[in-house]
Structures are given as structure tokens and as C-alpha cells.
Length: 257
Image 1 (cartoon, helix red, strand yellow):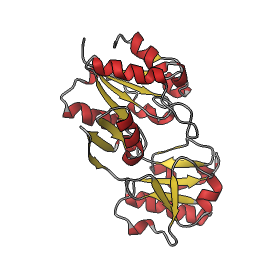
Image 2: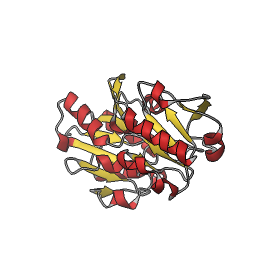
Image 3: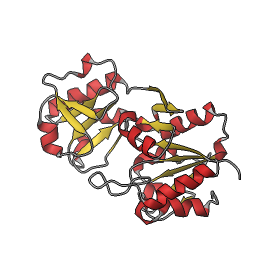
Image 4: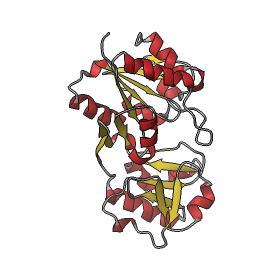
């Protein structure tokens, strides 16, 4: 069988149940085992930080991963690096949030914890996605690397934040937006190039608005049944929902096992 290079988003694609009741469907686990037995190359492609995605990578036996929205590259189990966001633009964003009195937080390292200057961000969001640590006097100018930022607001309040127009951002939750890299295709290409693979041998699976960046025409694109409409409109195949054997059914349709 022709070897394919298959990249999976995590949340809503490999993982079902949301943030509160996360689980990997049994049919997805079986599909991954069969794909590996057939000799296909498997990798994760996620917006999550490398630290927050590594547990899923290890649980499912993956050795390669695109993390941090395309800016983090892990090959054969080793993190090669994460490109931070533009520091000047993040500083401008935080300065504007201060003027508008909007709670904010930052991710300054590769971990499962963000930092905030006070308790307002956590009180506003009641978030379960990741931990928040309060650092009084937090100042983004003091850090060499800024990987992500988070702004607590309900839609459409973000529209009045002028500095967001120069930054990649996405809303996954009602209570806040993520300012993070949004070019998964960049990371996919980096891994394909490393292994000398043809782009048209790649297959990408996704469900969210941030997966649009890797739904490009040089490879096969699979949207989950629970995917947003924008992603489905760009897909070559639309499978069933993540919790209704979506990965398994797509792999069968593509003749991957």
C-alpha cells in the first residue's frame, strides 16, 4: 500500500467530549493501530502548546507533531523548537487591554500554565482548559519569548481591540479569545520536507476554524462531521462526528486499511 503522511488535529478530531470530559473514541484508537500497522506516517497537528499536547502524543504512540498552531515542530520524539509570536505586537495588545480594562493572560514558556497579573482573568473565564498562575506586576516587556496571549471578553467585544488586527487569533470558548500562531500548514510542510515526503501524499484531519490554515489544496483534507462550516466548505471529504467513528470511517473511505 502507498505510504501516506497523516496529520490529526486533537480537540474535536482525535479527542471527543470537550475540555471537561475528554476521551479518545475506541474506534479512533483502533484506526490508529491499523494505520500504523499498514506503515503510514502519523503525526499530530494542533494549536495546543507542545507541553499540553505531548500527553496525547505519547498516549497514542505518535513520535512526530506540529504544535503551537504550526510554530512548534517535534520529530522522532524531540522538540526541535517553537517560534514565539512577535513580541512588539503582543506588547501593543496588552497595553491596549490595559487601557480598555480587559483582563488578559500570557503564555511565556512551554508549559500547561499561563500567567496573569491578577485574578480577574480566572474569575471571568472560570477556565478548565489550562492552569492560570497570578504574577503581580506581570509585564510582557520583561520576557524574551511570548508564545500565546489570552484576552477575556465576550463576542463581539474583541472587535474594538485595534491591535488584534495585526495578530492571529481565534475564539474557541465564549469567555475569551486565544492569540496564537495560525499556520498549521507551515508546520506540516516542515515535517514533510524533513522526511522528503511528497505533499500530495499527505492527509490532514481537522474540525475547527484554526484548521483552515492547513486545509490547502496540495494535499487531501478531511473535515470531521462536527467541523465548522467554513472547514467543511474546503474539505475533500466530510466524515462523521468525532464520537461517531469519524476517524475510522474516513480512513476506510480513503482505503488506508
